[in-house]
Length: 168
Image 1 (cartoon, one colour):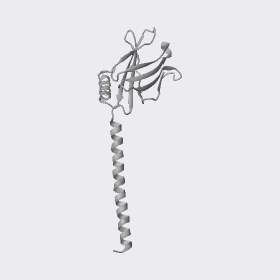
Image 2: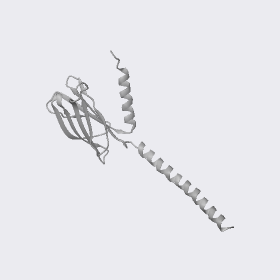
Image 3: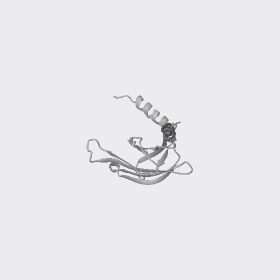
């Protein structure tokens, strides 16, 4: 066999063999990324807060997605007067080894003279009341891992609640 033919065969086999190996490596990486994205809580936590008066009137229902270890800020403004802040919320979540979640929060509602901050240890999916001082307000906090079956059920219940409300 001629040396040029041997070199050509080796070069072609290297190119095609190397290319298929690269495809296999890329496919494996893609599958691992997809599996990691589907792991429960891989995107973070849904933090849902509900604030209402003692008579049951709901004042606010802010919800945010919080990545573990990173602070998330939410500011709700009056739509008719954008310079007026109705609610400001800062949340930071930290996953515990036990599976619980530590939630650091800072909540401000200028119209209600509410300023509250603290740290709460929570079990994901279980509502917990927050202490708001002497004000006639009650707050409940709920955390749910995203993505998860509990998050999907939460979204479905929110859709169902909206569909049962009829416009006047």
